[in-house]
Length: 501
Image 1 (cartoon, rainbow, N blue to C red):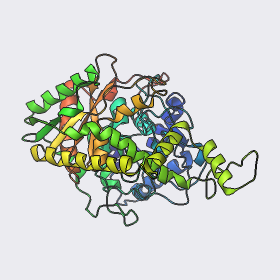
Image 2 (image 1 turned 90 degrees about the horizontal axis):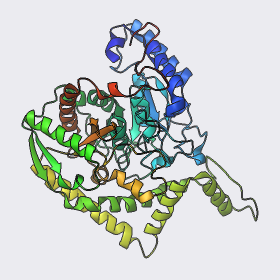
Image 3 (image 1 turned 135 degrees about the vertical axis):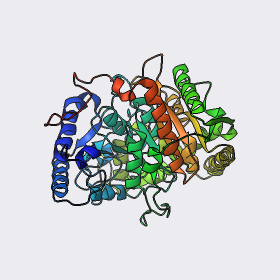
């Protein structure tokens, strides 16, 4: 799309309108968007067209539309975090990543659905309704960023931003046949991302190809003095790494603990086929063991709720957002806060707040939160040892393909197991990338393969990921999303007013 814009074959207004038309046609079925930003998106597109006609130098992605997870604050659009407690709230400032997108002149199509405050693995915990998987509308699109992944998979947006706390970019990418990247912790500014678990959260790109994700990552990456955890490193050449991707001589470590029992047979079949392709392309496949990964899920579900209970304390009905008054008794600040939080938070948010408050309470802090942080250190050491044996690590992204809506909502522990392969990267702060590995034989739904690299070595992910993507596309005879079913009787392609596909 960017190349066609630069060549003058299409205009940004045509391209943006085509995506808005696609949203109008299919989002009633998918429900990827909570807000559609029609007027502003078309105005920015018109600015790009005028600037290009005037010969101005523009960013490579100028004029290419993008969707934003509704956890990232944006001026002029509601930011709800998928919660009633922020319904209709308008941010007075832009997140750093939004400032960069505006500066590069990407039309923002709107805000995408998510599990409330990013708490979930299925986008069934949004206060504003479920998002549906474009491959099968009766199934989940992953979570918490199912809206962004579904929008890209349904051709409602060519690019999107998500956030990843325990796999919320990578796991939705896996079950929707898209590409999702969790950058190194601190590699992309978190300023303006509503915090769920501050030591785990990371903004990253959602796209349909590894190369697209790389270009978007370059745009949003870099140091931000407003984020105290931001790395001072210069932005690496991710797009060049993807373009020149090669795995010859690369040591790829298969993590023993991230396969086997609990993994769907079709997911493992596609995983082992990908390993065969990498081996044939000259990669060295080695087995590595990360023994403490088996405790990562338990540690995560103590650390994350503890940080949630702290971060969500600010939503009290006093400063901003929803305010609910008690129906009886004296009108005190404590009673207003209690009534507001009872009405504004959903069941999953309440569950995690209570769990985290308990884990941090006097007498339990060392036994629960403190012990979980020790396990986190052991997971980090496992990564260090593994990367002495391999340049990158590889595993299935999620144990299964997309399950049916409602299948696990009454069993939180079963839901939490969906993140078993993605959580270790967040505990250690290392980068991870998920790309499609094919369709599972049992159900014909997408499976994903996850690549992990040492901290600050995101380039390796794009190098290996793009190489594997090319091998897989050749094997399939074309992009995997070409096999996605039509939605609402529409063609899964975009047609501009000039007839350009």
